[in-house]
Every structure is written in structure tokens, then in C-alpha cells.
Image (cartoon, rainbow, N blue to C red; front, side):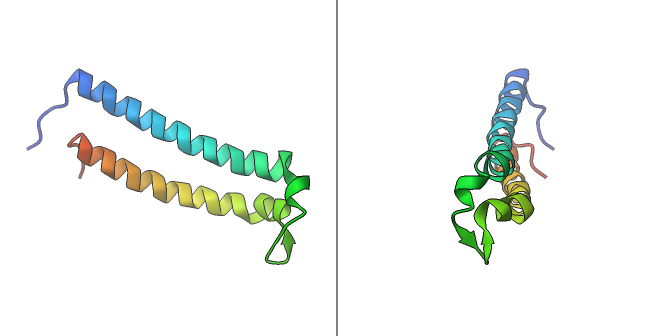
Length: 88
């Protein structure tokens, strides 16, 4: 049976979780809003799969990045859970 987390450890665990969320949400924002809306014209000079890169990010790229972020979050949280001994 696992020991109860101390308030200090709980606070450190939550801070680490929020830091991870902030980094991943920033990446998601940059890709979905920055690449798809703000930087669409410069990116459209390049092509990926026959489509302008800015269009590709708006239609598919941001979705792929979002799905990748889900897997990264799950893997990083598993490591964080192990570090704080709260894993499954």
C-alpha cells in the first residue's frame, strides 16, 4: 500500500503537472493559431503533400499535433506519477 502524499509533495506534483500543461498548451496554441492563422501567408510559400503549408496546418497539421500532444501528455504524466509514487 502506498503512503499518503505530504502537502509539500502534493503541491510539487500539482506544480509539475501545471507546468507540463502550460508547455503543451503553448505548443498547441502556436501550431493551431500561429501557424494556421497568423503565419499562414509566409507558410503558404512551402508545400506539403501538394498543399500550401499554411493550409495544411489549418486543415490537418494542427489535428496531428493535438493528437501527438495527447500521447506526450500521457507518457509524461506516467513518468511524473512514478516520480511521486502515485502511479498505477
